[in-house]
Length: 325
Image 1 (cartoon, rainbow, N blue to C red):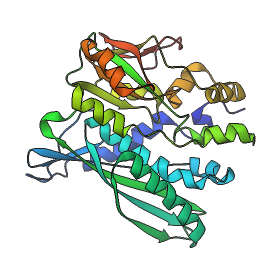
Image 2 (image 1 turned 30 degrees about the horizontal axis):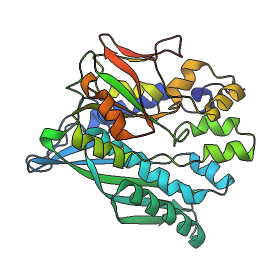
Image 3 (image 1 turned 135 degrees about the horizontal axis):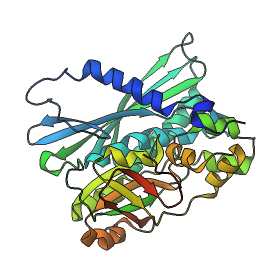
């Protein structure tokens, strides 16, 4: 029985080390003036200077969720996932998404498939309030078996409005935003456990929730200290904002039943679940305690105060017996 993400074929720790090896080789490549990198210790998007503002950029794909979407005849949803994984990252630094481009690689031309993907991309950009400004298609029968999709999104933020986590302090409040399910993470493990149940399958291919409109609305009205997109690595993503504090989650959002099914099906330990999946919280926002209730009101029905910031290290969750860090 597969009970960890590593056993399914994805080692999170090894992946992080590989990424660090790549970054070590490219971090010195930097122009001056417009286009010069703005350094973030732990960010969800890259930033470069543009006058008194900054362009934010990120790129991501959908991963092996594509295979389950094919099995469930749900290809029309993966374009939403692709846009979501990018634009949800952009807003973590306070940037408003402006443009999205896609890259689709196939083993052979397929008009019906491309039409379905295009439907999802258009819907994702509509939800993100950004322009679908182009893309690229490649036919690669020697490299690709089936198809793969990735995208890149660009956004803009004034340099003095960048959310970089440096304003976080002890006593700040954590606000969680509900996820729509596993979003686009952990599917190498999910697919090892999926038994063909159509009702469960529908929940597993539910598109990633896009948080752009409500979060951008919040940023305009409240000073936000930090935002974490909860993707691969689960709640450990909170540490990417500022790892000089401990993040206590003592009033979490309800865990959707699909995660209970996954945990029972794979006999997966709590800690493994919370460092692989979002467990019902797709985005976590940090604000001053005096702005907490107002922020929840602005964010709407999918938002809830879930915890606070305190001195220490890592993430502590009331449902997990061992610290996540």
